[in-house]
Image (cartoon, rainbow, N blue to C red; front, side):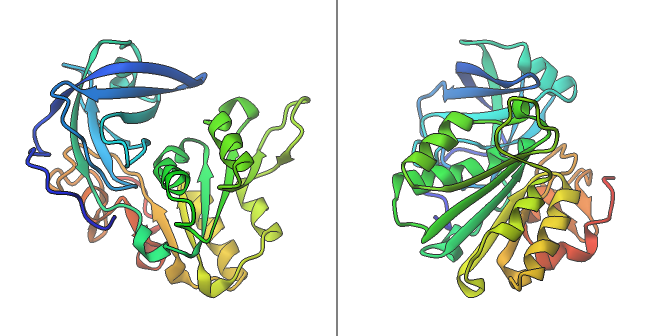
Length: 281
């Protein structure tokens, strides 16, 4: 899984996909299930992203949330935050979407094979981690243990809970969920997702952490794991910046010497620790 299969398509040219299904995940989040018009397989590495656009509506960088072993369906989960995602949200089944990609460096999954992997997700940070869950589902034993710490603002902001409960019931993942603002009917834990870390135990030498979510959450998450003596080099972040070109030319996603689109979006924590207070350009 450390390289893409031979694939003749040019990732710099947008390719038309048709919406096979559209799902509402929360009041402000929806998923598009896309099938390539030409029926050719679309290969990607877990953690990579695509540039999506409604025809004539501009482009947005969106992480790939689908099963990497099923290259005939491409899933993107979007939060409505700007003009591009608003235009995409108005599309429906059988409408067309332009897809350019895949881009970026993905999760180092070969590094964590047969190891304990802890996934830490905040809100819309869960979709970039979903391909790892599908790998675990299709290849039981790929990870020694797979633990998911997932937090969101409210119960209604939690995404893909039926899938997560199914994987938990199948003993594929150990699931810990928390919400910042619990409602009266919430029976689970409350507080930030980082508050879940002290309660879990792991072997420092055999454990890795992959995280995606708000940067402030990831900063505190890393500190919490380091306090539990997890080596810094075992922690990886998926970063987000305003990406326009996805090929390192426009400079919108520059983070000091790095371009998020080209050098990331996945980075070792130790490589960017000193840059995490740099605001978006």
